Image 1 (spheres, rainbow, N blue to C red):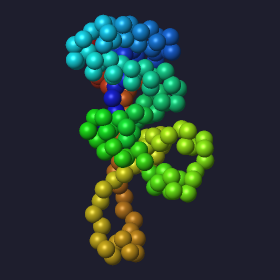
Image 2 (image 1 turned 180 degrees about the vertical axis):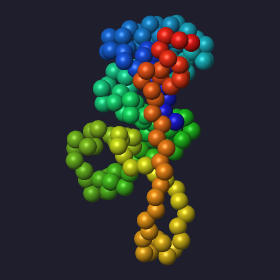
Image 3 (image 1 turned 90 degrees about the horizontal axis):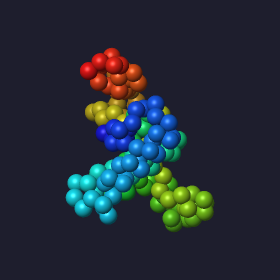
Length: 159
């Protein structure tokens, strides 16, 4: 599940770059490990850093606005108990053995979150269906956060 980077920084989805920077600096001064030695504050400081990294980058912010999490790759998942190898694909392995472009190697592993990427849906098929093919209709539930109420269900200005 994608983290609420806007909520972490305490800004609205329509916040500009300056408002995001001000919110980050305010929280960073308050939660920095040199200032606040509380263990919970250190974890929150990391969340604030992640939120600023995402929301200050237009491409990463676009991924968040589409419902993804640009930091939910192998490195982040490994730190949070997920699959540490999910950021590496077959192409990365082949590039390691047979050489890839220097530019691609300098970028490091690519994020697995891509806006508009295919949805993965598990379904049971028989061997015959796999061999010959089958067409089925699927109902796909897409959850979008309302920009007016940020998903609260309340009209703006009400509580």
